[in-house]
Length: 121
Image (tube, rainbow, N blue to C red; front, side):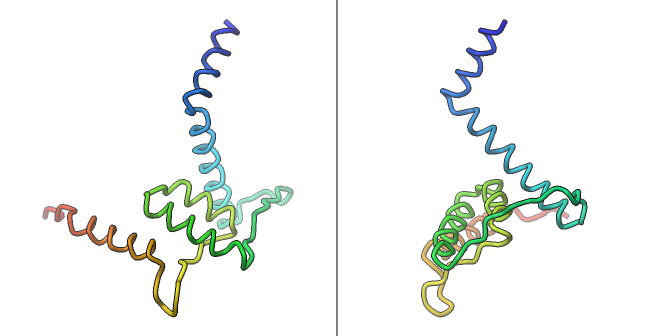
């Protein structure tokens, strides 16, 4: 019986399903913790430690956030936002001009909204 469990775990690891399951679980746990924190439901002895980006890493996080949004990686983006103490800034290149990736996301979302069927009455 033990070898069957070991073989199953090895197969899950080789096919990378185990990694995906762990990432999904982590995203759900972080999302729940953030929700509990917002509602003041966290136990007082539980310390949730999160990463606070500095000026050097903020741009990189913005690109990662835009990439996740573009590819509809919503759980990954929620987890990233939760681990970085809130929302990730939208990267701007000059003045109010957004990065090429941010503009591509907007265009993609506009096309998607235009293609969506109209709600029936």
